Length: 358
Image (cartoon, rainbow, N blue to C red; front, side, top):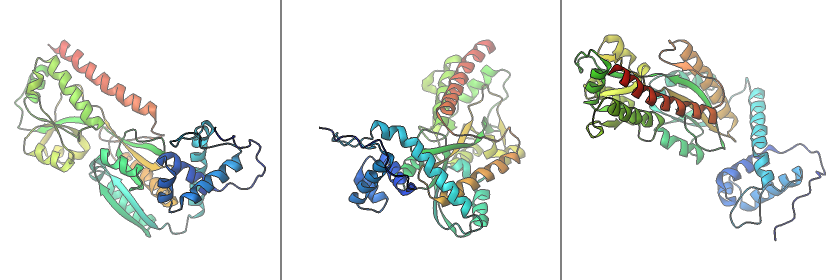
């Protein structure tokens, strides 16, 4: 038998303890009383007590105790986003109250190399100036690694290529990096038509970001589309994944291949003429860098996230939009759908333009 639902008539109007809401968020994310207890440095009995107290205060049952595996009740699922909003509001209030006071502690920051090679130095300096008591532990890795580490609680704040992680992770897009086809100036012979250019490019390795990322998936699909449209056997094409931006740039300068890379990351070599943008159409879809944090993040994480947004916007505003563009708003299904549509449209344009050119 399932236990009777908690009374829906709250008996009190005491101030709600946001720690209980944080416990609910952690429990929803981990799916286990024991895992939540380990994360919050409490006993399983204390976690259960907090959830029961929250149920009594709200007058609803939050956890379905009639199943062998953990799951939230329908009311628990319905109230989860409200709990996130309350915790976020509490953190914002705490941050506002602490203005002029020291934000301290350790910030475990994860970033991808695209950020390292653009505005990360400005961000770190701004953190040091604004919050000198905040110690930054920096991790540079691929998006496929950073997201799971954030979800597991190993990182506090992540700046990575946009991707879906988990409903408990709060995301905000920060910047769009236009991507171009880049090669060493003397690598390709002069070509008169798009058909000649595409065929020349596909004779070389096409360099892109780490396997499984949106940029890699887009480039892989584009290469397949270009090969099909221009009569190049797919078996003769090579897409080489590069988890390191520095390695990609080094191979570009050595004339190893053609890269689909943000022009911002190779700006100094474009300025000297060592590397060039190829007029191959269409261009790959842009890379979107977004900020990610957990829904129960500490005040210090909220403070650092605010600095990241400000620094990124200032950096974007100082450069042409052809190289980087600031973004606003929350990263949601609509943005992911838009990017997927962009990739599909790019592939379609590849085939149609090739047909016209030929």
